[in-house]
Length: 318
Image (cartoon, rainbow, N blue to C red; front, side, top):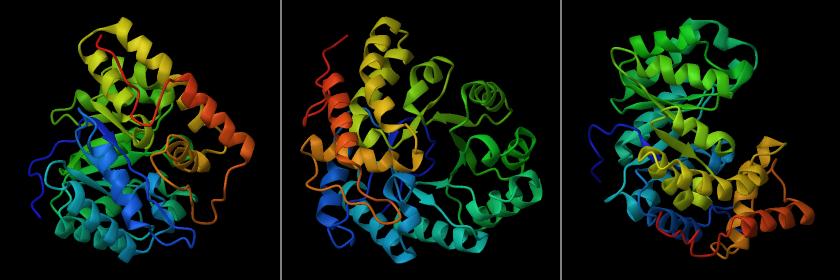
């Protein structure tokens, strides 16, 4: 299936969830339903699969390939698909990247090699460069660098070297705290070859877009993509009063999803889809476990406060 050539990551990009049945196998029909639900939102620019939101850490290579295949079958003709690359070893990351290109993906979202970064690997620029060069040698797909916060972040000098030496890097998905996030926006967009900055955390989404972010790539888009599109367009059009009113609706949902422990953020999003009647079950693979009744009730209240229903946020025109 043809991919979207010369794709540039920008705009609103939901990172979709992955449905499992009660035996922890991939529920293909439920996943297809979810993909179609999200893809039908007016204004989104692409969809991401095989990333954090789809519990890629718990999926085999063959399962990731199957997820990409069914995604292309459902939406590949009318939306670019971004495929996550999650692997500690650079050669395995390159194998995933090649699989994504063959499968029709238009772009890669490259997550950092966790086991190496846990021990400070990001402090040696040569390690980060070797990882991305190995991936780039395997495919000509554009790359989004997933920039983690705190000790997992690529230092600015390293990030700039990566961009300079790996020309297929076209964007970063930036999970940095606000001060570093603004630095990234200013620095990367002023380069001779500008690199787009995509926000990720809905907790500061409005300020991020107002500072000039080129878009957002977020698991919350699996639930509230219509609100994200409305906010993105309101900020783009400099309609800040309307943007604030939309952000007021995003706020309770973001507070519900993005709280400690962060490892449960996509667990919470699955429960939200069940509450809204968009999915039948919220099954996560171990080590993730079912949320407590009290937390699920809190998610339901947040959705009610945000006035989100089965059919979406039902926004009125600004």
